Length: 607
Ligand code: ADP
Image (cartoon, rainbow, N blue to C red; front, side):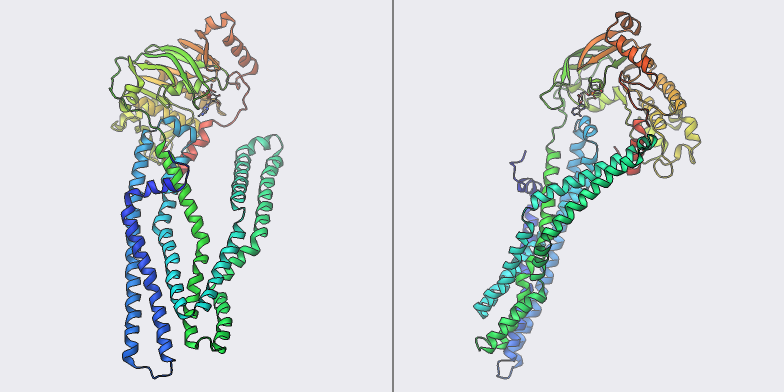
């Protein structure tokens, strides 16, 4: 990836439209230069009119014509530059979004679930927009404010070099004051980001924890942390503003046309009264002086846009450079559905193994349950089967074929997953279920919904199966999970990875989910991440994971008799009562999927 400079990702992204952007820049430069010419012509006309000798029309007409022609050239070139930059940018945005979509589609699913979809949304939406601002607007603005003053100043030097030197003073003063205002800005910006981050964290904590805090009679406490974060931010921000207020205001003021005119008129008047220059010679300074200082007025916001564009380019290229799942060089098709893990190790960061030396067989039609303390690697191990990540060492085969050699469509036809974190689309209930198999008939959709114990709830919705989710209706976590079970039933993958729900506030919903899961399990090879040992007593095999290794495996009765780790976990959960999971105490709370499912729908995202 990048060389560490921020310009490189920008240049790389702009490469396909570089030619057109260069032409747009050249046109804009011509427009900016031509825009100065009418002012020069008007000053010349003023000079002629006040030179004493009676002005003759044929001496003035060429200047008037020049002014008009230059004005037209400025207009035409400016419009052409803007149009060209926008066309180039349109193509760039389209190409970039297509590239991102293609690339994201080939990223390991694990990358998207680990980091959430915020990164993708930011790249595809916000970052591409930031690049649009940079290429279609900022670039041309910067060209204008840098070109026009050069010609204006050059002309002023030909009129009177002393006053021309003075006309640079507001610009230099503006630069000096702006630099003073921006001194330490990098440190302050970092602190600004950190302060905003603290507010967000406190706000999320406040919102998500309010029920818990309230139920323990500590509502004020949650509130206090949020208030402290906002007060901290207010203190920091007002301190920052106070320290830079004088210089940043002065930087803006000193380059405003009124101040520039004042700074030029007073010495100009002295020059004229001293007969160092004529009154007519003062006119171009009054007309063009403000243009010389103008760049400072726009430079502040443009610098922000350039920085935002650079940061966006860094993020977009980082996403485009993220390694995709390897495409099979010699595609293989599984024969049967026997899953076999041999010597499997996995590391998220390339250093610490989260799983090591896993040997495991999932015979067709059997249920294998993964148990173990939180953080022992259950979810990670399960996520390797649908290739959320590729193994770091060892192999996983399905029907004798290495997962990495099975084309994605073939793999997902055979390996399905139902996770706690249910993703629903802003679409009809039927379409949400039909994601499992788009060509399924209405009868098939309904049959699966019945088996998943969600049919009755669907028919109670305002428009039954046609009800749009997320607009008027959001499903509870338990209902969303049953819907995702219906989807998996319809997809009918012979191998299923299932993350058993952790905790449900509503026992009725939990019983329905258990029924739905039983329907799903029938005749399939199942790998279940079990949070409650009571639900997996009948599993064909229970695998105990600790620190990423298998420490015990067998049937429930055998493992209890062995009096090992499983027996200890079982005892711990029984002693702690039905709400305890993972062998560790958990707070009874809303189902993990509930809020997420609702959030997904609210955002209307196709996650
Ligand atoms: P379990 O499902 O048994 O609770 P996990 O598989 O979630 O365990 O986690 C196993 C270990 O891997 C933990 O130490 C956890 O912190 C780490 N881990 C899980 N997901 C990630 C991730 N996306 N990136 C880095 N580390 C992770």
